[in-house]
Image (spheres, rainbow, N blue to C red):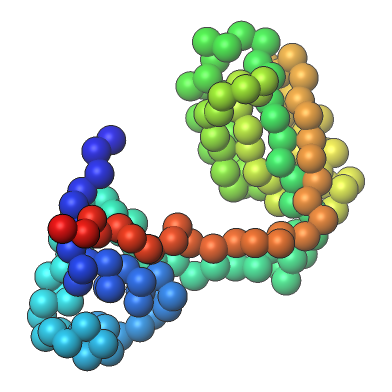
Length: 158
């Protein structure tokens, strides 16, 4: 996983679109003092390099009835089951993130559930049958900070 050398224009574009993914390319072009075609080419380049990974609408889980956010550390009975457990987790719609981590857990996941009762059902009915020796659940009361990766000082000064 190498990183790519970005120039000042790339950095400026990333800052603008990170703040507002729906900003028109022509508005980005005006702010950067270049043509719309130049912005289109740069966005395509950043996408091809894998720096940009599309755009998305973000759904507020609470507004659609998912009031419980939980982080769960999973301990596998057989650590060789990483791949099969990860594939099974992809089939559980309430699981929105899964991470391979250092430390005590084999896997660390993020789940949205309608309430604590629903969360308990997910743990017992969907997670335990995957071959867990145990799990540790942390319930989030409220998200205090959520932001994009900061776009600052990406360009090395000469």
